[in-house]
Image (cartoon, rainbow, N blue to C red):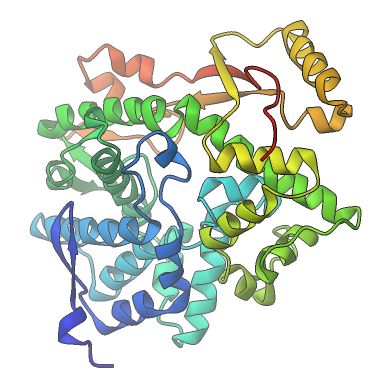
Length: 413
């Protein structure tokens, strides 16, 4: 297939022009499975906190592919052997690494399907595309799965310092305006090297790694786990869960045929077959947003209230604590809202609830970030760094929240 000269490049606000290196990648980008990512938000409902955060998974995938091109070129300049087949596999793997995300990204994993991670669905998409493209994605799948003998290939796609993270931190920082999250991704790419088939960072890049980890911590607390975003996502999850409950009782809940299928069927990893994958490929943010607009007028008080609050940003009040919320405080709000509106225990749990959020910027027990010293010794970044905060970043920080209507439940429209 000849690639149109007009579509060989994308103009990206982060990196400038991003080129498509070969016809296969162009065909994959043009495929409806991938084009769907234009309709999947990168940061879910974070635009309710940061109005500029309307970028999509499509943007992120192309940016990650661009950084992968730079990484391949850089590693080859340092005598790291990457064959043409492996290069193509790397570019495909990073391009498609997030293709399995559902509507509003991570919210899907807690409502539309059950215990099916987006990585699992990404793999299913890649396997389906591999059939369509006569085995051309075989190497990419091995890299994505981590079964390729060259470990560093998988680490470029999925590790604690991969092209995925290097792009989304820089991109999300740009679109939210959270400057603390801005990283020098190009500098970090230049510091990459390979030792014994493992990805490492050269010693002169240690300060860039420190800034990267600090930026990751800032972005989680200021953007990804911002309390307003947390309560908004819980309202979305609750809306879909309530719709499922009503449908299971034979109640009418209007929505698109695609969304209705997932709300009326129990979808697990075991039964996620090709037919379901095709249905999933038709599901995006538009289905969910259109449903919320309809449901805000639904006769069921709980469903309408959840949707109205979300659509009009009249969110529940949320309090964050460093210790678990005491049960008597939860019970107090539950009883107040229950009495005020004559709700059952199950119904009131949609409007008053508690939970926890966790943040660990660096996990020393997973694939570690190894620093290559000038003498050839490899050292974990936490030990190599003179930045005392890095030790703190390798510990899990847990915060607990409670959500409830600040002044009872408001009058429905």
